Image (cartoon, rainbow, N blue to C red; front, side):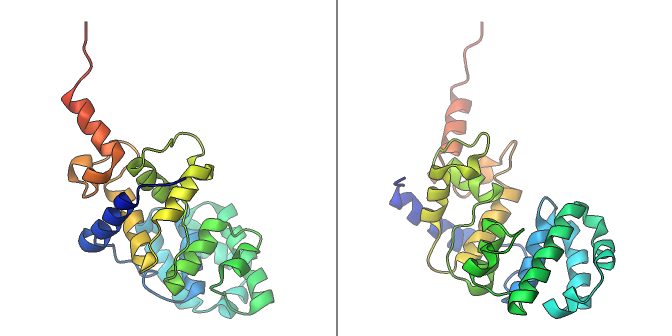
Amino acid sequence: MAINLDIVSKLHHKVFSSFEVMEYPWRFIEDPYKIMLSEFMLHRTQANQVVPVYIQMVETYPDLPAFVDEKEEILLNQMSSLGLVWRQKGMILALQKIHTLYGQVPPEYDKLISIDGIGPYIAGAVYCFSTNKPVALVDTNTVRVIGRIFNLRLEGEARRRKEVKEAIDQTTPMNNPRYYYYAMIDHAHQTCLVSNPLCEKCPLVDICSYCQNMQLSSHNPPKTL
């Protein structure tokens, strides 16, 4: 899929010139282990709910050897407030496998994606956020923002569609992708909402097909009998 490079350029300019990202304890750090912990915990869970659990975990288990030395039931109990026990068990198994193979969590995408329980998003997030090197991060947040900008079909399993993944890949900046993706995630949570997005407050309104269509609809309401 070929996308409009002028829109990509404007998107990058707006993100880096006018977007501010939220501060969380797992952001702008370079430790792949701590980043991986946060990514597993954030799956289907609000960031503010994750913060106290994450802080306790990294204080108690500051590195991978300390984590894998703990009993599973104790780890699960410490993360119980986050729910989704199957997710926590999957994280524990993945980190145990990584410890067996590498001793520490590696930043390399190819090594991470080979581990059962680690999918493309977590592997990519650990790589991108720990190294600040570009890789396409396809999740519900980036799919919604990029999909709306380029008027892509978003119903159903949009993140699996080739055109959606290609659009996210082609809009990933070569420089400072870590900041860019933090900004995209925050924008999806604060402005580009699933329902009732705040298009009137969105700094991307002039390049977003969705916003422009919404404005057109409001100016030309359907006729009624």
